[in-house]
Image (tube, rainbow, N blue to C red):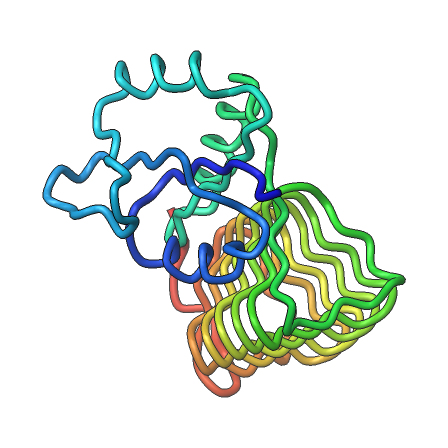
Amino acid sequence: MLKKIFYWGAKGITLEMHDTAKNNFKVIGLFDRDKSLKTPFKGLKIIHEKSELEKWLRKNKKNCYFYVNIGSNNKTRVKISNYLKKKGLKAASIIHDNSYVSKNTLLGEGIAIFAKTIVQPKSKIGNYVILNANASISHECKIKEGVHIAPGAILCGNVVVGKYSFIGAGAILLPNIKIGENSIVGAGSVVTKDVPKNCITYGNPSKIKKINN
């Protein structure tokens, strides 16, 4: 029997998320503030207003899971996830059948691991982390709460990624690198040195270009 799930966000990453989740979850609720959007799920109305959402949550929270599909602001994604959890919904963990996750990996709640992603032994994946398609997470990496790893990114051994950070598509983080909280690594970058918190870095080798506010 399929579990019930509610999605916050009705476009973009929601389509990928449901493709990963469809064998285990049935979508029963959908929220997005953008009133110009058309629903991606036949027969399912998008909730646009917060007051309407509150009513929906009171009626449907029992045995319902959620996932917040906001790929561009990780801190907000975690904040909304905690709000929905307080309302009585459960954080869904969504792992594609075509991914590989070592049995020695510690997984938090509310994670998403997309197709062909690899997570090697003794890594730790925090709450509400997204590991997008074809990402490679090597041994003993620590990915903290709310991080988003974009498609094709490679994290070599013992890499640490701080809370709410974003690792761009195809980026390579060399062994033992530490990425500070709320930082951004640009697509295709090769990171050879530690990155402090609240920074934006890109290039090959990557260089810190600005502060991430």
